[in-house]
Image (cartoon, rainbow, N blue to C red; front, side, top):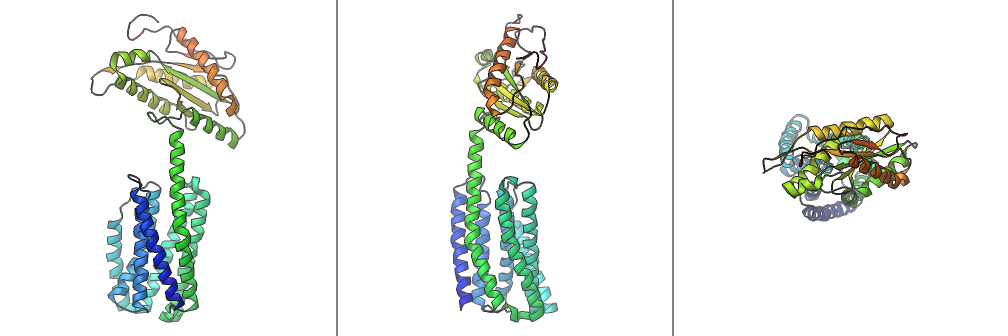
Length: 406
């Protein structure tokens, strides 16, 4: 009686959280973070336990076959939902249908060849393998795709490993004692149902917490980035610098401030759409030219910033010159107009600085160097401090609009 009450409470928990997951998924258009999959998983597991309550005792029947299929389909669905949460676009119904057909056939073969105890032992063994694979996947995720959720992933790994151990013990008890080990009021089954009921109480709110954290992180990331180019904005650069200088030994950083030459004339001549395409083109070149680990951002209409980390003055100069040359050499096809534009940039380089508190002074000095480069003819790299970085001086270039020396 106690076991039946526990299973009934477990079913109620699963059904309630299934409805909640479904409602949450409907509030997340586009990327539902696997919440619809988790809703289906809860529904499948609740259905399996409802069939177990109706069946009452281990038996060979169509209801029992469906029960076993649903029992294993639920963790598979949770697994697929977790993949969805981490951005993997995996299908749901096709894998479940294939598994259901295959496992139904396997049950028939085992029942006819080895008897009912073997069929229930196969269920426990399959559950053990599934939850072991889930545990290993979570541990792998801690080291790779879920580093930002280290604590949460360890917590889930412990919970899932508990289910794995209990199913392994159930398999051994069935092998030793046969179907008597599955009596609902047995001590082992009571422990099993108590643990599952605890999970039904703990895991769904934890999943909701993960979704809220991911949404919060996404909002924080959007607040730190320029919406047009997806480069960091001033706030994002400041926060990234704070993390950089806090996480490792202090190393000098250099700041590049880049401005698109004659940008106002581009807007006036070709329109703001062309100007936006120029901005996005330069942003893509900036992103691809800078090294992995450097910070790239947009802090104004046509002003871009790059912060070079773990390098020296010569490396900074070479990066800036390569960036300037890339922008100059690559044409921009303006969509819908047939126009092909070429633009240039002027880059100012700050002296090296330490700590996030030096960002404003580095910007000021790079800005001074930038305007000195503009006054000297544009399309050049200019350093704020000749002692820190050698200044690259290029010959004057023609204004692309007036064709006169600037």
